[in-house]
Amino acid sequence: MTEMAKVTPSPEYPPEEGCYLRGNDYSPVAVVVLLNRRREETPTELEALVRAAVESGAALAGTLQTENIGIEKIICNIVANPNIRYILLCGPESAGHMTGEALAALIENGMDDRKRIIGATAPTPYLFNIQPHFVDRFREQIILINCINEGTPDLVREVVSACYQEEPVLFRGHGLCDIGAYPAAPLSGKITWRVTHPEKEPKNEEEREQMENLQARMDWIKKRVSEKQRMEGIEKKERES
Picture 1 (cartoon, rainbow, N blue to C red):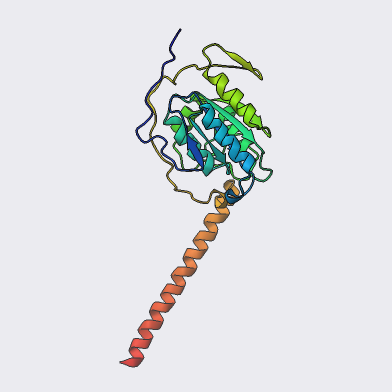
Picture 2 (cartoon, rainbow, N blue to C red; picture 1 turned 120 degrees about the vertical axis):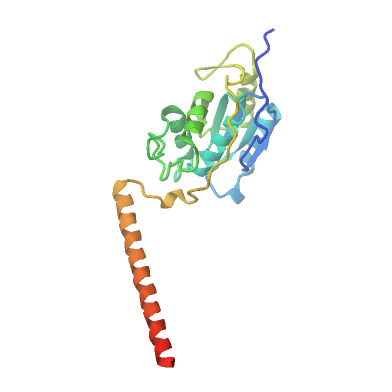
């Protein structure tokens, strides 16, 4: 029997907080359940998928709501644990955010120079708060098991169990088994929160130019108002003296 190589995750693992449960740190699989409504309205059936994943032996299992900051947090948590080699993506896709499609597109295509996920149709698939080499490492480390718009506890248990096996188990074209830890040290880091509202960022160069022009106009107005107030203050002092 060959023992699969396992490593100790980063001391900060998992570095990012979120709506997830932590399971077996040496597990080869994490489970991402798509959430297509407000967090406080999470259906019990989606919560059941998260519980089933951790109870079956997943390293991490939780919900994903947004196509930007939510994905950035997942990346930080995954690359901090090289033992995680698979992500099972399941649950109902969000027609508004297309979050599942965005995560799948990132793993398949990466992101461009503007930090936009290539091939994503989501409204704001931008990863402004994470270092590019974290994204590269995430894509190299992870194999995606795409079950978007599906999800039962039995399906989750089947996939998690298959990822633990020493010999490949065929699942929808994937030969799933425990392939051991990614052969590099864990990456430790959190998102920067430099951009807290990605939806407000310009989507292209034309929008960026318009925003810069608007900001320049606002700065000019503020300067004029400030100068006017300063002069009025001087005139008032002269009248009072």
